[in-house]
Image (tube, rainbow, N blue to C red):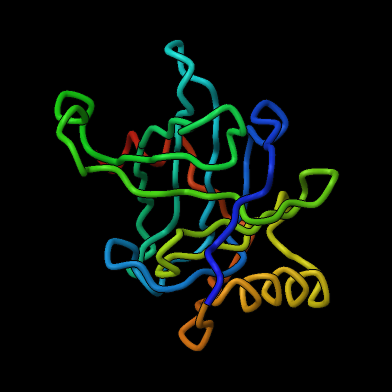
Length: 170
């Protein structure tokens, strides 16, 4: 089997902003019934990428997870991401791979995965994605050896987790 390959170069500034999770492989730390899943990327003052993941959990409650991603080289398409609290992020082996495997020229749809093929996401700038575009990106994942038999497609209901909702849930 061939190695998983990231795109040759990612324009990180163009990649920043809000993305909607269209589908993914199961994650042990993410509720399989979560809805309205978004990831918003912005630059931290230290040059790393702030990752703000939000969704509504199985009970309909707003949920948020904040992480930080750091490119591993100048191509910026392979990153290491951690969701540990900032004061313990120095501990080795506490970050995961986040590789951009494919992105359309307008940066509207992205395929992200890990080199061990255990994690995969199709992300889009809108909560809905044309079926043929979704299938085209998933075909790229298949060609890179990903098993998509357990693929999850979360629902998007039009709701968004806001800062005010998160403040009330504390």
